[in-house]
Amino acid sequence: MGTENWYSPFGAGAQQNTGQGEGGSQSSVAAGMERAAASSPVYGTNLRFVQRVSVLAWTVAATVAISLFLRLPTVVFTLNALGSPMSIRISETTVIAVFIALLTASGTERAIRTHPLYSGDPMGGEPESGGHTWLFWGLPAAVSILAVLLAPEARTPLFQAGAALLSGGLIAIILFNLYASADQEAAGYRQARILLNVLSYTAALALFLLVYQTRTRSLLSGSLIAATAALLAVELLRDIMPRVNVVLSYAALVAVVLGEAAWALNYWPLSGASGGLVLLLIFYLFVGLARHALHEGHLSRRLVLEYSAFAVLALLLIVLIGPGL
Image (cartoon, rainbow, N blue to C red; front, top):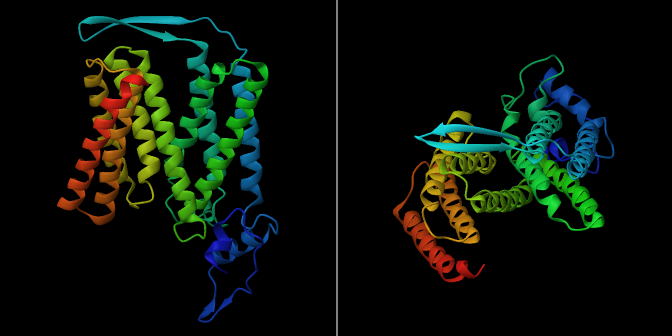
């Protein structure tokens, strides 16, 4: 059986192997995967995956719709941070955002667990990829949070309903592409990886803009931007290096840089759009350098000069165009 039929949720079908290889009988693990692949003639590997994606997409859409009408009392916590008072507001938007992020992460976990690389064998053995399915949580969680934050911006009930449905559809698209990107030898891996990269950078820009425009204390805004950068950096780096601790180290480094950059930018007279674009530029540069370092094992002088030239050009464009945004 070809790899593309094992792992693609859109496969036209799956062929059942006789169970005998050239060198002898197959292992129970391979035979179990063969039977799982043949069990769904419509969706190739996994009808369970499609069902779980459908449930999660409709649940996210319903949660976004409910968030438009839910009203909870706002709780304000006041504390002293670094010698000065700071207030943290916990509103219904905050509660719903945290809830939908956890909900989406849980649904993503259940969906990705149906992939042959992460489901283990029928005898209860360890998954082939070590079971690190939490690496897939970042992008769906970030997009679901964005849906809750941006849906109220729709002015009419019709557009609000459309925003709720769009959020569910976008989550479904992301999950199908996450599934396709789980195996680098799968037929649709490259296309899925490109789309996930575009969505990750788009989500990063939107969240950076939303956080930076609030102009809250650097301790809070910097922490939120660092957390966002860490989640999305994991998504952008997870398929480069099989060693999870190395990926997490690089993602943590990107998060620290973004948090420090947000702290510094709060003292600059930048517009919200300019600040968000600068943060996206820094995020793009450091994630790109991390990807090359993980893939090649080192950074060449040519690569550093290339990224430096791009950064200078992008900063000039932001300075010239940003104030008018």
